[in-house]
Image 1 (cartoon, rainbow, N blue to C red):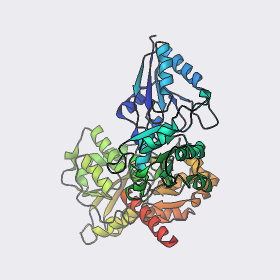
Image 2: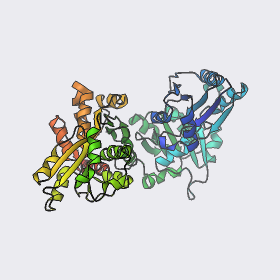
Image 3: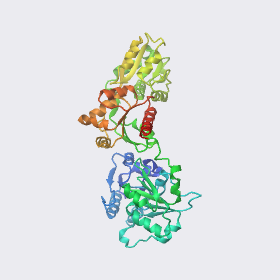
Length: 510
């Protein structure tokens, strides 16, 4: 077996979306991943399932593995022929000890590659609305460690030159030494009125920013119990924060939102939430699978010409139906002049992705809205095919029957309790760390309750948000307190409803 290679990859400052394309590519191909403490663990989801994951994180007072041991680990894994990704916060060569690791590899003849990352020195201030340079205020910036190697004995920082020599000063890992840093800056010539910002857990939904002056920041930090990890920014550019802050002023900023959608559907909601500053915690409680017996569905597809309408209630139904359509050697032409109905924009889009354009999408995305829209359209006596989940509400079928239609419901796919619901989401929910629990279907309500068992009342410790009245009714019947119901029964409508709810809460608090 040949020798492997080590990739020293900068993961960025915290937001997993800030990893570089090259870094992500290395992560996806790695045999071994050696990762740090402050990384967003969602990055590890990109790794191959069989990849070995080794945590070597360091906190202020506790190291899971000493640096020399990390160096030896990287060498050992590479010598075993493995492709190793050393995943480091920020940039490997910006106060990240990547240089030491590269030296150790070079000394042993281990091939390595440096994959630069977005440094917290510039990204964290940017997420706080603070540009490190500005044409009117600062033409230079300097990045300084706030925690020098104690084995050096004396400090190698020339404070008398540093304090007046650069307009913007950025200290990494310096909150624990805030008082002496401030003292040195003032002694070196910086005015006590100089603006300073402390930014904790920057680029994440837990970001917190404390702004003051060199003269009062130490007292402010003590009063607010401001803890590391944080980036310190000193200089006139800090004054721009109130005008330029964008990240922590988003409508859902800092909200920890439990996403209970199926694994393959969760990303849509998670992306919308992240884009509004929330922290999506994915806990898929439902699994979607093929129907255990497709004979009835296959027969309905074969006899499709005998129906006047086919009505789809979900994108999952569209996917399952079209899968069987192709399995039977058929395609969209088999629909002929049959009218197609879709409940919801997502369902309509799924149909269009299959080359099928729905004839009717109700304005109100619900079974009730669909039936109401067909009133007066002369559907009495017409045959409707409803390809649906194995467990579903009878509301649509009953509504069509009341209009005089003939209804044939057929199971297109099955829903079941997820066998591997994410433990992180469950732990956070039971620990009271979730702000909002979202439900996009009645089955999600039922399955989350089942997964929690006797601990289900923990859900009521958070706000409950439902995509529509049917899901809300299921939640209420189960004993949950429903706080938010979307007016538009879509994923975007659900997010909008959460935003509006929080706005109303803020107004009440004023």
